Length: 362
Image (cartoon, rainbow, N blue to C red; front, top):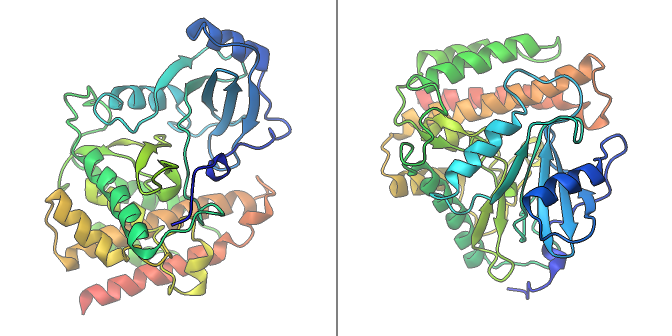
């Protein structure tokens, strides 16, 4: 394993994008009212990740913080709720220590044009599509990283919801059914002429929707690029980020979502094109091993044929997210050329879902 003791491996912010500037003086005054020991003005940078909320780093000579705010313009109902994201993390922190420490929530839009919250920055490595240059892990170390990340998911699903004061976070039982109905409706609304109807996939999911196995805290976007690793020991998870979609729900649905992003080195070219995390590395568990490992550690029971439901759900949900983005491009609501070929991906994911459904019948 290479020497990792240098900040070059850390996730760094870049220049703030035009039109997305903060009112630094106002943010600074607001923050110093909460942390009076801060000196000088912050150096402000912006992270390019995250297609939804805007994320900034406020670096002081004696403090390092992250500010999150919603993007400008119209907001989908329930999306970009800074207060909810803040309160979820604040409640989780005492019982799930890898959550960042919250500093404050600002609901006064006069400060910088929208509500926002500030938290302490967790300094470390964020494993994105590839590990940072200079970080090379052997297969055994990679496997340990992989199982440590899965262990943190199991731990999250074991949080005592009542003790954490999070009982009001979800809508109670029937989570699986609500998800299938909700995502099916969203796909139908976002469909364009060049993508499949997904009628067969939606009907199959609806017919086979199981009862919830439990009602626990779920992250809903569990990926390697939402964890922070210790620079001294890059297999150790010291932070879990991006709690925007966290809720109470079925833990196996959370795992199914996660697997939709789990791309192997020997997957086909189209799937490899969407890889966003280093699951292709030698030593990473394969999808079926992830499921076996998780079930063994969590104690939940589901047989192989029934597991297919959760895997198809994860891929279908990803297809809806992809298609919603493509819909905006198709109707000229965004000009980002990165979205131009997302319709191809929607077609591919339909094929992939049908392949899993076919195999489940054999």
